[in-house]
Image 1 (spheres, rainbow, N blue to C red):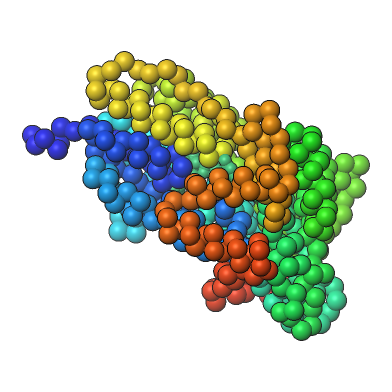
Image 2: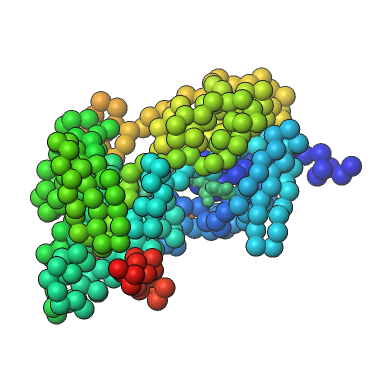
Length: 437
Ligand SMILES: Cc1cc2nc3c(=O)[nH]c(=O)nc-3n(C[C@H](O)[C@H](O)[C@H](O)COP(=O)(O)OP(=O)(O)OC[C@H]3O[C@@H](n4cnc5c(N)ncnc54)[C@H](O)[C@@H]3O)c2cc1C
């Protein structure tokens, strides 16, 4: 047996926050790391909305995983969609266009994240894409920018209104940021670009079944965010549940049972997540419980019952909020546990998430931030948001170009990344539907 064959084999599924930070933590460990992911990049999801609204390019928030781990000699990156994990045989099966790859492991870290949930109405996806991937963000960029293009072509006032009405479903951080940016795009960037329509008349509707925007930030910040949204002309409709969706509009039920329709060609889903289906697969094999969203109830050390060699981290964990810091900390923790074991050390303390706080931008120069007992809103919070996001963007090059693009959009009025490809020009599926109606 060669020396290489004797090294402990760690397989990591996913190149998001959990997977990447776990791999990096194993940098100096005497292990061989294989990171398998279905995309070739590490995605900084919190800034997807800026790709969708033309502020940033996809490369700035999605650097190639292979390049990030280039100097980590014990790590190898494989492209593949993991379809099956066999915890008894300790193998991971992944699919690529060329076939199936079977990768054996001694330790496994599963950080496959979450997908969009339409609460049982999967057909909504066709008309209201979510925002989980670069593909989603570029699809949305196509739909948003082309809604203005197609409004310019239309002559019927109702049709123009339909194209110029944007509905964002879900008033959590993603929905608020998205609605704020579409409104600023319409009112700050696009005026003057068109001859028939006035983009500033666009209506941006932010819907939620709950009673508050950014509910998890507490009443004070929620109220401040609500008022800022109103200031930038976002039409916030709370207590409004989406009951149906099609190509040309959205059906909403209000608290009093009234049903109404909002005609709109461009709808965006920012409500609800479900864990990767790999969670249920692992739970079935190990007897671990899952919650309604398919997230796995893990042991205190993030492993699975009876399988201390299998860790589940990040958005797939039932016990923790679905935020980047949970994934980063749990990924690092799982890697630390593996290092201890390979050195013959006793297991460390149970995983404890250290909540560093949360923040969301509402518009340019305006954010809300909740850090322990401290709450900030407005420009100070926005500066904090800016510094933190710059810090977490991977790579010096991306930080420089991101800062440049932010200056163009926030100090100036421009958007540097308005390009949509021809595939997106007719906003693909939305337009197919228009053709049918
Ligand atoms: C639009 C948006 C905005 C957000 N904003 C914030 C924010 O402001 N602050 C914050 O803290 N959090 C935010 N989050 C949440 C945060 O991004 C997630 O909590 C975090 O990314 C979870 O990390 P993860 O490693 O568990 O999963 P992810 O980062 O989602 O990574 C999952 C990885 O697994 C891969 N994968 C999935 N399935 C398979 C498979 N079958 N085979 C192979 N690979 C697979 C994916 O390609 C990806 O590489 C946001 C999320 C979204 C979608």
